[in-house]
Image (cartoon, rainbow, N blue to C red; front, side, top):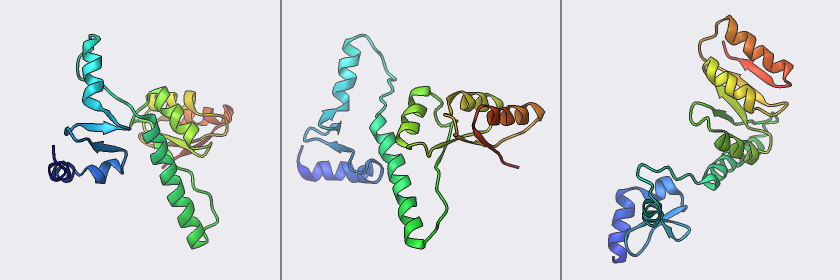
Length: 163
């Protein structure tokens, strides 16, 4: 595949817009990450008996995005003389798998809070938050939800009930 076709495909799929250089198209037209064709990964998994759909997760992408977000806010705070801290908050509804949340928490360096909008999400957040962690409580709040949120204080968390 020649360079002009590769560039055309990259433009059509806005590769630079969403991948920020983390993915590229190789000379055979395959989407690659760190020189490895994703189609090759799928072929290898199929050969082992797996079928599609298959979820490929790139934890370093999650970590890089969070660190970039934190760096942007830190730079803006410094540029504008804003003295208060910035703490990003991850909405647990996006992906509540412990491995994803734990990787983001580690990448956040203790600054990442978790947001929940239901009792089920609140229970997950209470279980996954480290001591001193920020918990943002959104959504419908009945008596039980508020009690659970306040129980977070007894667990050493910092729950914020959004009214």
